[in-house]
Length: 392
Ligand SMILES: *Cc1c(COP(=O)(O)O)cnc(C)c1O
Image (tube, rainbow, N blue to C red; front, side, top):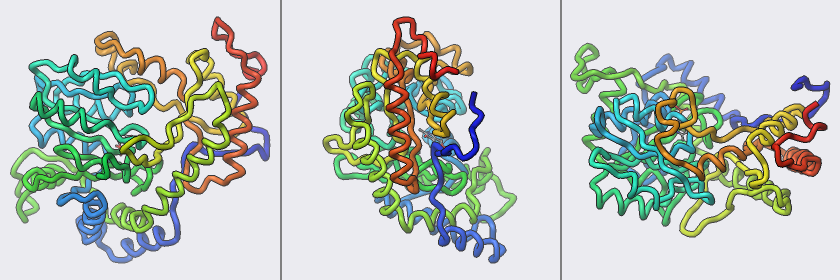
């Protein structure tokens, strides 16, 4: 079914934007002989700290490692509950379980696809310790009510800004609102280091603890002096060099991603069967991570999945961002614990379109046209059976 005819167009879901400067930066690290714990680490940390407007940044080996260390260093553990959306990447909830705490899933706002602040108060119990506020798809979460509730109930805030480098809320970069914020640099993110992550915080003591935890619990100069149980969550010099080179053109990268989002909006805005992401929101600046359209409510999850296969068969890679965490097999114990009607209804109809800086206008047009003809040939039947022509 997914066998492509020769010369079929092939448009990936995402692609890193790597130029000659990135290649030269990595090669020069290789030539230097210093591949870990060198000058690039500190420089990359300064780059991100300055960009976000934070005093401390701690580079780690992935966004997941960053979330894990934040929760650990903030003292969250067994018996604690952490509020988190289910409509996000699984790493957010996994990090809560890594430290022995319990994720409590919150439903989302259907427009921003972020935590619905109105759902927070009802989920708070005497065990609640923190809110893991995710800036999903680069749209800032509604931080003002989230911060107010956290203050009122004495909760910590960790921002999962792994999809939101450069996004702003009320004129301030996301990642700078909570007790700590985490960014990620997997190849589909706004910038990449291959694998990598960065924690930012206002708290110097927390930053020092994070540096020790990422480096086998070392806090002094001695390589064989381990003050506490730590991890190897270090980021290599090759990765840091890549990150520095990417950060040198962060504004251009984000501006180009926004142009791609606007081009999709223009091409698809008259399609009544699609709900498109907002281009702007009051008091917020979006940093585009993915472009996720949703099929309208008459489509079933089965329709969406069949449509994805039909597009894949034509060389267009689309994604299911996200399959709710509480419906994953490794979260079977959570499946019926929380009622998350908005999450379940919207997640079943998402369609992430190919999205990367170097996508050509002709490719955007091809995606839009292929999607629209597929939709036109798709009378969603009451049984949810997909149109035969697209299933062959
Ligand atoms: C990418 C991502 C992460 C994890 O980042 P990795 O670097 O892949 O470990 C965490 N949370 C969210 C919301 C993400 O999108």
